[in-house]
Length: 461
Image (cartoon, rainbow, N blue to C red; front, side, top):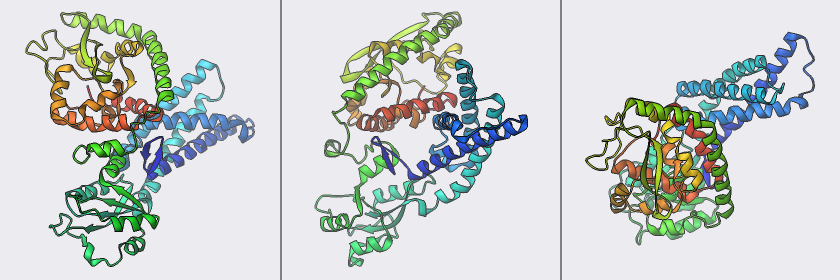
């Protein structure tokens, strides 16, 4: 994987994206030359159009990231990828047409954009048919040797068998006398020189997946492997990198303390994030004010009660604040006390069901962002009644409050809808990853992919 601003991106995804960007520029140039030939004008020098080609490739590729073209499901299914490509390119072309109309430019004619759209769809789908067949092979994956043959090794096997996985396991070595879960594992005693064994297999990374590490660490082996130039990784760190979450089953306080992350040098990043929050929330409130007022009226007509509701939530450093949303449930929704929201919740009103689906009920939260109690990106703020219970049942739950809560977040774009202790546990793993690896780049990635969550009703409600 390539580490970009603390966030890991698989080599296959980076390669696929680079080829896509090149093909998008080629599609735009081809459409320009075709249209010029049709109307009988000189296409001009290529250098004069490089800016337009770069803009076309940038907007379309950002749109592709937004709708999940580079996600795991798109890498697994060509049909899924083709469907998302159609949506992404269509949205990108609409955005380019609108931008060109606003500035009164002549960089993107409607006819050339139509040709570019058609060429891009064909080229990018063809790219996935050709390049995708090779990206799934072991030649494009890191070769990993696993030290261990228990349940942890089995988890790595399942992870490595995914089509979008960036690594291929070339062997397992059992380091104890216990019965191995991975049956094909080789005993450490059967290997005379482990370093030479690693070199002969062409291993690029060794992962330590021991069930019991006390007095069992093969320090001499690990030292020789490390000094031979092979990367050595620990199980929890490997899982964090490959899955984008902190695995609560295996981490301990010492790992959280000594591993990379939770950097205190965030002054510039935090300041830029606050400036972004103020600018965008103010703009969003101005632009969406008519929409908020319209649906506030519809909420009042649809059911008795106020159009807006306030609810206490736990924010930064455990401090409580009131979140403001358009009311989507009946006023008697919690007469029996606080309850988890559920799929197809019967307490939701008719208008509430629609505004929750398209996230219109979230728009008034821009005011909370403007006040500084929330950010656009961060862990979703939870209710105090639930937090007290979750902190008792889930390790490290309080650590998610070390960053400001947000309207959208890493958990929301990666974990499907759910409302239970177990769902909160899985979301916490993603929230801890965000808190540990926060950068403006990760925020940008989350904001872009939130569009996918809205369009396809994925993630939290």
